[in-house]
Amino acid sequence: MTGESPRYNAYSKYLAGKFGGKVYKLPVNLPGTCPNRDGVLARGGCIFCDEAGSGFQCLPNTMSVKRQIDENREFYKKRFGAEKFIVYFQAFTNTYLPLSLFREYMTGACAGDVVGISVSTRPDCVNDRYLDFLQGLKEDRGLQIDIELGLQTVNYHTLRKINRGHTLAEFVDAVIRAHRRGLEVCVHLILNLPWDGGPDVVENAKLISALGVRYVKLHSLYVVEGTVLGDLFKSGQIEIMPLESYVDSVVVFLEHLDPRIVVQRLVGKGPREKVIFSNWGVSWWKVKQMIEQALERRDTWQGRKFDYLNGPALIRAGFPDM
Ligand code: SF4
Image 1 (tube, rainbow, N blue to C red):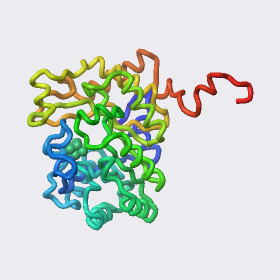
Image 2 (tube, rainbow, N blue to C red):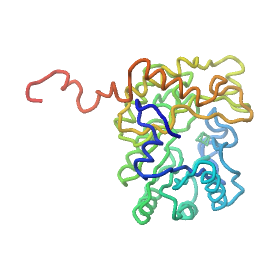
Image 3 (cartoon, protein in one colour):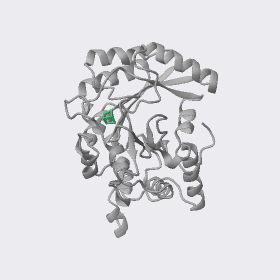
Image 4 (cartoon, rainbow, N blue to C red):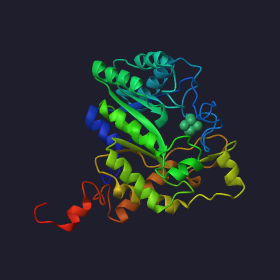
């Protein structure tokens, strides 16, 4: 987890600087579902979502939360010498629960070596009462708490195509509500959705910079069997951009991103089972390496084109009293 390029604001360095030691995330898989799958909004979910609800790296949700945390903690301690932990409620929609149960799970995650909690959810499952509880937990226990919001793209036409069940407005609302309570926000984006183009890549960076989120996680699109996306891919109705174009998109994204935003990932890890397409058949670290090499080769960096906030036209006009 070390050795990232200094050309972007990498998460591992940020964590080490903030907590002064090796900090690892402990993934937890709650027995939950998602309103985009259970019929409240829709059935079937986002067109790329498999039955695991994007929690394929987790332990099974039949295990208690405590046991998942304990097993993962032992693993990370032995394997990587981890000292402190962030409990990461990863799969499905972790605020899509009765408030009492949500409270129970979050409180149960607090232990001596836990320095933070990360709650992955959908923008339309963020509500003041849940946020108020998290704000209290953060203040009482001195924890870092972030809300991970799946957005995937700022292009609201694409959001409809991928059947997200929410639009851009719900995302903006969720970020504002979380920020009001001093909670951090992490945003998931997929930079190679087949319906998006270069301007969307730039607008992704600009919007989350304007909102002042703390973290971003980039994923490349993967395709698994048994999904609508899988059917579209197999029938040739969509194409996934070449690897070189993905690398290029990430570089452009980083150039426009506020340099203070911490980059948790440049590329995701695809699932191992039922995969039709994942990371162009190469390992995720190879893709990451290619992005870092491209930054180097082009002598560019995160934030090089971060010049569009705070009235750029006034600044460009060069009025003498500015
Ligand atoms: S919001 Fe997440 S869990 Fe729900 S359908 Fe979409 S990817 Fe799956």
